[in-house]
Image 1: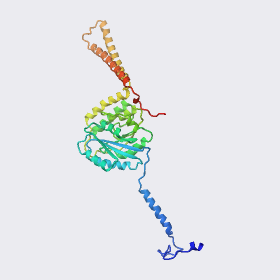
Image 2 (image 1 turned 90 degrees about the vertical axis):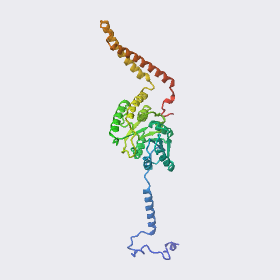
Image 3 (image 1 turned 180 degrees about the vertical axis):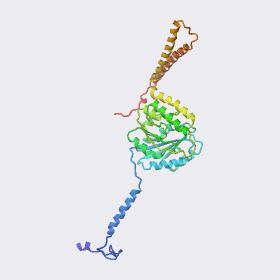
Image 4 (image 1 turned 45 degrees about the horizontal axis):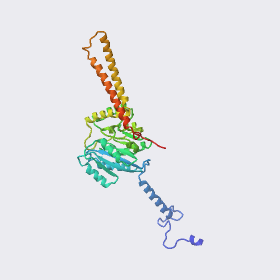
Length: 365
């Protein structure tokens, strides 16, 4: 039996050194069996290197919302960039275009993108309703446990999506992008800086860019937000008011490639009017008497001081017929009473519509 297994192979089998002509003693060539395993290891090594590295994040699915108006040239390049940016992520995703009443071929291009890729969806408005309305509809239709918002003009970089998700994974509820280096016209750039400074002072939230379109939210945040009018600029303020944690990271900002900016001087003034609205909603909507009562008391007090001074002059024999301050004092007292009345009416309304749904519950045992 031992002779059978040790017996050399018969026939035309060549020795390991038959191709090289070297003697058996001088041959350094590995046996044929070893070459087979080497080739096999080399093959699997190449296959492994060909795979893209996966970035694991603790989110099962992300939803990317893109509100747009007349951006037909930007849609296809943006879709391609999103695919490249999200491919390394080990998670599912969907992209929802919200067409805000475009009058160019944007909707046709979106439909073609959605036809070729089922992960892309769209919602189209009959008319232009504004960015806030587009975002609100997107929030309601998003199915991911994380929502990313970005603009469609290619100025927001989709490659920042993994960075936003990584920051969100640290435990934050909302991560806002900060366009630290902006590629915008002079007026838009510096008016935005002034706007952000005023918002930062009035809201007390220490972030640099409130209106950056590139943001990441946990699902719980958007479920408790109601965005309308022009309030999309103040989403971090509204979220902070609800008790969610806010942070920001610097993001890349690119020059606009196609189309024209939708920024106008009217939006600048509307933004400050909405800022007053947001400050009232976040600080006094549940306690209106704190605002109107304070203003009423202040006005009433100044009115009493003015009229008290004029009364003193009248007792000393100085006539008041040529004293406009008398009318000022009376006006201040009347305005103070009106402020008090508005505050009381507000408190009555708040008391009547108070509901447990107003409170965001973080956990329950």
